[in-house]
Image 1 (cartoon, rainbow, N blue to C red):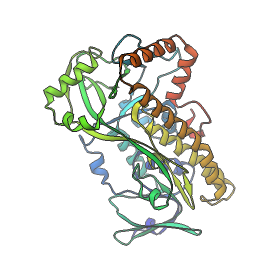
Image 2: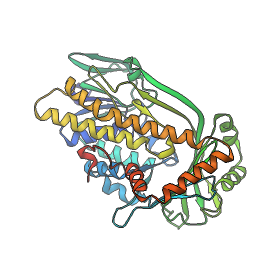
Image 3: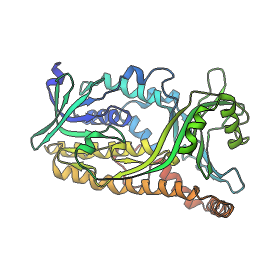
Image 4: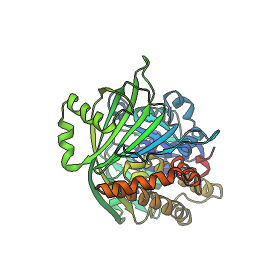
Length: 408
């Protein structure tokens, strides 16, 4: 056991993914130490070709990255989202979200691999983070005196506050008996990288079909000028296996039919992956010496691309609460600090979850009448600049009571 393993640290973060590692780095900037325990092998997670997924990072999340010192290294991989185009099955009645002069972008697209590399490299250099990878937790302990995780090799890592950052299936959350509301959409997201003949002009497309949204998200061109985008195509669970089994030519033809000519001709399709879609939200996000962040607390439909950004708002709020407590000598697990985090994040995350669920259901209503009503509604919003500004501020993550780390 190393010297770092023997130290009792402020935070015991279970889960070293994007949200868990962002928390460790943000906490370190405020002088808070952590153990980060993750079962995955970081070399596999950052391997070329491991994961074709890409993520939209909101303006507020970008401020967090700047404040924890990873934005400069990520900038070259960012593809700005200049506008968002929303259509119902590519029919008339399109809705465009375009920021005004001097308002900046609506976010930035990054390959997930690049986000992981930036976070992992920064964590590796931070002495306040003891990162324990490829580790299996066999026991989680919480008491009035502290918290601990026992690993399969008999190491025991101790802390003052346990953080559940393991994602949707969090065993820490379930072991704590925290009630969770959840349902299955009976849909799958098919994800793949595309190359295409027309430039995307930094437009993110959200084309709605009754089976679910068909999203085309802009990525940087390859070095040779090849135009690239990321596809997130929602299909019914019943159709998911069949779509995954299609040959490349048939899959490409299906994509081309749904996207029309917005990106010209689809040239190639990368490796496909599929992910089940569901909704969940916990009744509370804290317990005795325990806080939940990210997907451990709330899992939403990817329709608005807010999943990771919601988790990063958790990070900003929790770190601000803990740093405020540390300044006056409070234990990180002080009940009043955890209550403040609960109150701060509970309503915001719930409202975002409800909004994305509502959008999913609204655009999933089949039939010509429903489609005509949606297009009428979008055409009305298109003429209402204040309402569009509200939606754009929500997409940027700059509305509401923002934590300090998520401000410029």
